[in-house]
Image (cartoon, rainbow, N blue to C red; front, side):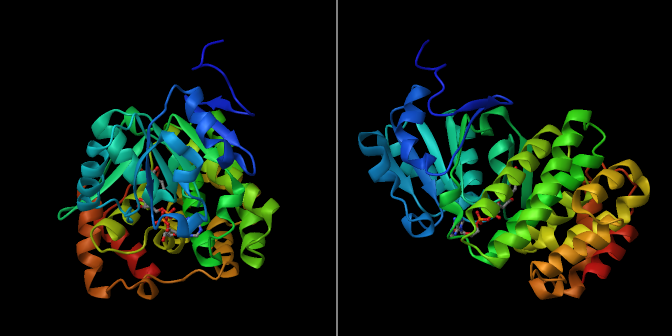
Length: 352
Ligand code: NAD
């Protein structure tokens, strides 16, 4: 057995990515990257040690090659340039992103530009760690795409790192994962296996998120939510996303709305729109979330989680509805139901 195909401490290979899923797994960070032949890691976080309570530098010892703690939502190009400067000044052979989708997104930007392997240590439920999907934002808005270089080589899920994630952020990022499961379920390129995974994701998330919000220190509920996020990310990475993700990318990238909460707010509305054109998907989803009408069930789940119900509550301006609808339909994503500008306008107004 060579150094690169050993599977230390419970690691498994899933869809080309090595996965470790265990409480306390972060303590073995250095041996896990070493098993991939990596010995100089550049670390990316949002807010550094204060977010997770761990010091990557202490964990990595001589394998620590530098750190950038300025990851921000929607991966602004200015943050990429700043991180890349520091990365280039180091002798790193790899990049480790510790944090939510923002840190992982910046890690993907570095991995794409330098071709170093990316290691992701997710501390939210965004699911980004399981996808080759990148997103970057500049003055013209948010661009997304797929690139195998953006897909992490190793993902370490350590539930203990998620215990500090406040209830509102936990709920919102969990509903972001739910959105991946919903759109994967009705994607034209979903396979039977993906649908089963998406159904499992929706079930795990709908069961665990209310328990996480009720007690953010509930390790079992957190672990179930993390498993749901993993499955949702796997489903997202295997399918093309539809109208819901397109709307959220425009609202986030162009209008600066918060990513995860926007997903939560929009999901029931887009689901209600798509439901007549995705009846089989709705049957599976209704089974997963234990509600006969999926959009109604998602609204109720948002309410139980204390999430904002309206776009207005997220700071969106009614005057921007037309511009947003125009942008969404100018570059549409594949969707089970055909979409016009007036449809998007009506969906946005309903969510407003
Ligand atoms: P985030 O990464 O922005 O994190 C939200 C906040 O929570 C930050 O302030 C962060 O510091 C803090 N935080 C994270 N983990 C914490 C913890 N364990 N304890 C305490 N605080 C913690 O939010 P997010 O919702 O995870 O990610 C959103 C971003 O991810 C967006 O830019 C979105 O586009 C991207 N995303 C990408 C994909 C993909 O496949 N490419 C999928 C989903 C989301």
